[in-house]
Length: 393
Image (cartoon, rainbow, N blue to C red; front, side):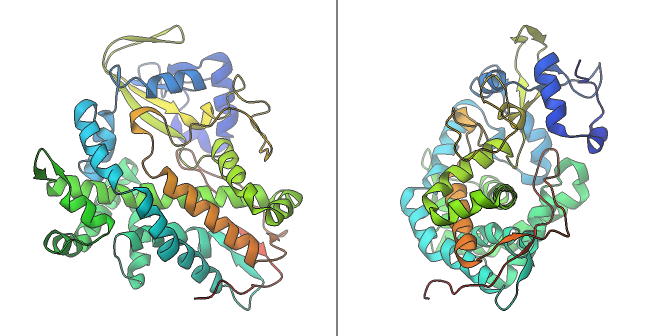
């Protein structure tokens, strides 16, 4: 029987997917962290989806406890009408015209500039030199941050993602980011332009503009949510392809397959594996009585490998034709930036496959996906034959 009382620290000794597989089989809903714990773990797809689609019985308020000290006021911790109003405002910032503009003026130039940095070489660590830089530079560009400060934003994103595991570090990074963004925000309040920050600072609810706590809460959330998760997902996509050279060649020959690469990777190895909710009343999940007021850890990473939904779920299969994954969540809190993330992944992968002929893993340096709540390869050492020229301009 799966040991759902296992201490979180012991996860380093075994594969988290093996553990979740045992949970789905033996105890799909159970206490997590000890017999008296108020934290419960949900691992099957149907149960995870049910929780995420039922905001009345499973509140998002718990996110204010864990994320609030770092992020401030964020929509991930809102419920009901409050959430609907603020989400609609923020969703406007990701309208199709904005995405199209970012694609041509920011996303494509950024990835090709990074690949240019590999010129005259035949080896690189793609995590260090590409995937960890690309999405954060895109987000920084969206926020109007000059290129010389992109490195600072990357460090802040990494530190903020430490959250409650290291509050002194994560809170300090949050404060530093707010101090940096304050002049940009104040300028857009006085002189709005056609950019994301202007959209946020000029948005109104009931005739009033958003207060600073809501503005900075969203901007703080955008950095780690929009940059670090996409960076991890890109590393997972690359590793999946590099471990299957014949599939990589097939995708290079037919770039239309990149959408399938992205979707299958998000199912197989999503960069964020857990979503938190809190019960607002006693509730039964899969025959188990869960008390009111407990934190539910919805293991979306486990749900995406549920045997009742997917055939051979541990296999990465480019030709998989099965129901969609839940990597971006579902229900009212489904990820607002999912279309931007998919665009970045598709464009970034296409640039690397087109411009790095002979791209392959370094046989002398084994790598694998690591992590629990956030999963990605920490390194991606590769060899390639050359660096082909990028598009003009």
